[in-house]
Image (cartoon, rainbow, N blue to C red):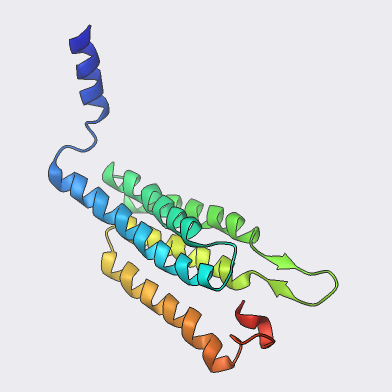
Length: 164
């Protein structure tokens, strides 16, 4: 009985055959979480609802959604359908971050929603093993989130859109 349980457990965990595969999984998921956390930290510092944990989970979840089928040997054409599903699903999550005030012509949360969407794309890049692309994208997104409001003068209280 014990041997059968141990053999079943060994078979259940056989999707990671060696240390190289474990390392690959860890690097991709950890990098996704870290890069997502960096963007989430920027949003949290600005007092936005979607902060560090949200961005980390979105990036890591997106990475996992493409990592597992990729590991299983899914063809690129089929993997593109998985990515389409992730992108559409994140769109629904982002829609919840957007608020339109009825009394004003003011829409809030667009930048946060776009940031979550970008975070999912970064997670997909990590999951596919495109670590350099993910890192460059994160740096560009940070530059946009930090530099553009300063250039437009919208990061000050009372400024247009108030950095939203």
